[in-house]
Structure formats: C-alpha cells, structure tokens
Image (cartoon, rainbow, N blue to C red):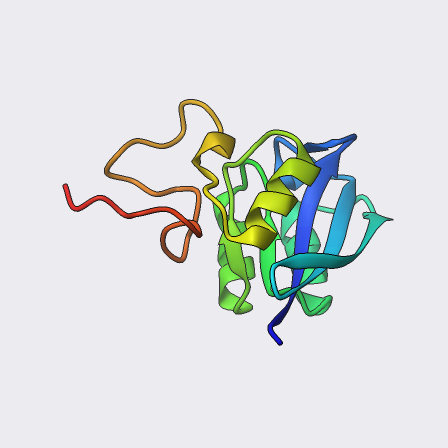
Length: 134
C-alpha cells in the first residue's frame, strides 16, 4: 500500500493562484490512487518563507500550488517535499487526476511553461507526462 500526504493551496474551489498569499490549504491523504481523507485548514498570515516552513512541518510529501516565489520554493524543495507549482484550475479535479496518476498538463497556468522548461514540477515530469527530448 502506497500512502502519500498532499497539500494544496486553495482559494474557494480553485488552486490558489499565488502560494505566497494563500490563506487556506487542502490536506489530502492518497492511498493506492484513491483519496482516503481530505480536510481544509486556514493558514495564519505570515511571510512566504514562514508559510513554507509550516507546510514542511506537517509531514507533506507533495505540495501543489500556483505561482510561488523563489525563496519559499527553495525551502519546500530542501525539506524533501515534491513541489508541483504553476498549476491552476479546479482543486478537486486536479487532486483526483493527481491521485489517479492521470495527465495533468491541462492544469498548467497559462503563459508560464514552454516546451523546453518544465516549471510545473520541480522534480521532473508530472505523472502521465512524457518529457520531450528537444
């Protein structure tokens, strides 16, 4: 059984467009491709590096967010958390697709990624995505 703890910054029912100003986080436990638990937590107002440290302290395996500044991005990655950033859209749809290992390219934020850069996943291609060799 593979179990994973995922955090996603949310704004209403959407992925929060900017990590640095997020006020709510959706925490989900995924087991064998299924979401087995989910809950929302309000985030205290703090500067982005503090927010990144707080996320790291929650034992998260993967953080999903929209745009993120360089410093909090570094903190997240140095904490051993997989970072999927520069994604947007409906939070539940993304979470379901991610849990199932489905293609996620439709969730890329417009204008931030080109064929030579993979800014969405800082640790390689998204599940179901083939990295181009161009």
